[in-house]
Amino acid sequence: MRGRKFWRKISGAALIALAGSGQAALAQTPAGPEWWPSEWGPEDERGAANRITPQKVLEAVSLIEEGRIYELGREYEPSMPLFGNRHFSLTIPGLPTVETGGENGVVFNDELVSGELGQIGTQFDGLGHVGTAMDGDYVFYNGFRLSEFGTSYGLNRLGIEKVGVLFTRGVLVDVARYKGVERLDPSYVITIEDIEATLDMEGVEIGEGDAVFFHTGWGQLWNVDNEAYGASEPGPGITAIKWLADKNIVMTAADNFAMEASPGENPRRPLEGHQWLLSRGIYNLENVDLGELAADRVYEFAFIFAPMKLKGATGAPGNPIAVR
Ligand code: UVW
Image 1 (cartoon, rainbow, N blue to C red):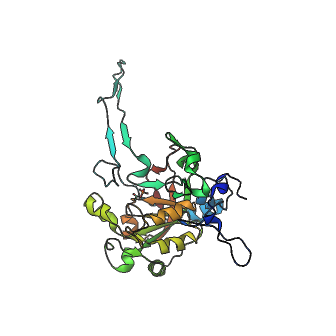
Image 2: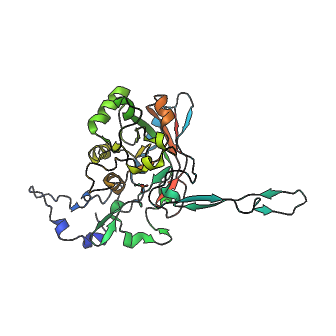
Image 3: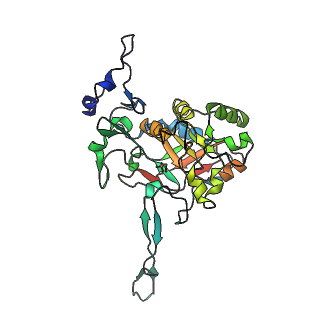
């Protein structure tokens, strides 16, 4: 069932791909075979968050044995690495901002925060963040077209408020440890073989509905050498990302600025991993601090994150946690 007018707009060239068997094949797009309608129906806006069933929550709960909480969020501060021209500032006007004049002398402070809040620091990418230019428009998760859902005051579809809460099993893939290094080389492309060997070493597997974290060691550069941090990064390449997507995970994450290797396997296809995952409903979490989890060799845990409900936003800041 396709049911929306974008289907009629797809160019003839994109529709040519038909299997010799007589079965219709998926049309090709600049980002691979068309990815809509989603398995959760043509109107769905939550994507892989739908994979977090009550059973999956209970599976995550069963991993909590010590009650130890690991904070994965970074502090938001002007000195943190910022991608491109993104910015962050926090000011407290007044000091105190308000003096009430009450006989009890009570005063209070407020802050004024400015920045691309969903896309700076520890950031959770929503399904409205990355799309694909095609057919004279920009096509996102479930085939939603930017010309139909984008407004200057926020997205009318795929806003971050639609995600709900992520409470699921987390898996840490400590590729740095597997490779025997503190930090992977700049732009190192993590392969499927690296992931399989690392999981073998750790004695865990990736399952449906999991949140998969990559420890590359790149986070050691955070606020220490911001230039190097943002110049390139190790991470999974597009081949490994497609393999992960086929495992029906909920989210990828890493201790770097964009999760995937940069530049990746094909420098002419930037951020292809983002494009592949978000188009297919799988979320992405960036700039997380995985140092303690890696040091303690915590390879599976309960992962919990409630994205701030910034209506119509492309992403959300916050302090995701791992609990074991
Ligand atoms: C990059 O910064 C490259 O990725 P994102 O837009 O998800 O932050």
